[in-house]
Amino acid sequence: MADDARIVLLEKKEDNDNQNCPGCNIDRLKQEQRGIPYMNLSFIWLVSLCTALPISSLFPYLYFMIRDFHIAKQEEDIGFYAGFVASSFMIGRALTSIFWGKLADRYGPNLLSSLGHSQC
Image 1: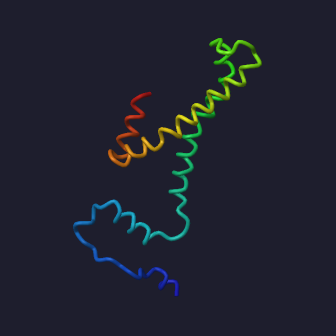
Image 2: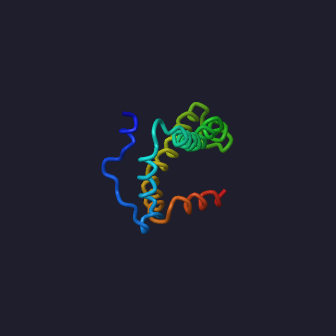
Image 3: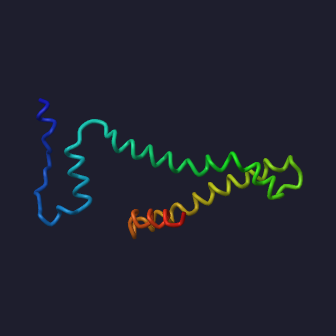
């Protein structure tokens, strides 16, 4: 009975033209994979961690940045401006994510990733 679970119901013919097709490779991996994909989940976890690092490294220094740049007239206003900076960071990410997604679909994520890393 366990062998019956591995039988693919609608198995497609193997064409030589589609061996390098990324979608075909993904379909082949889905057919062969059983269980929880821990490796793929670890990559997703790592990317989520890396996207959270810029905002988490910004917050500890926000108070001092606003105070030292003399943006706020009074010390009580520093919290207001810190919230303004933090929300503008997230709004900027939300507004540009569709743009970056379209560029990644058109030119590939590897090119945009290397472009982003070259800016550092």
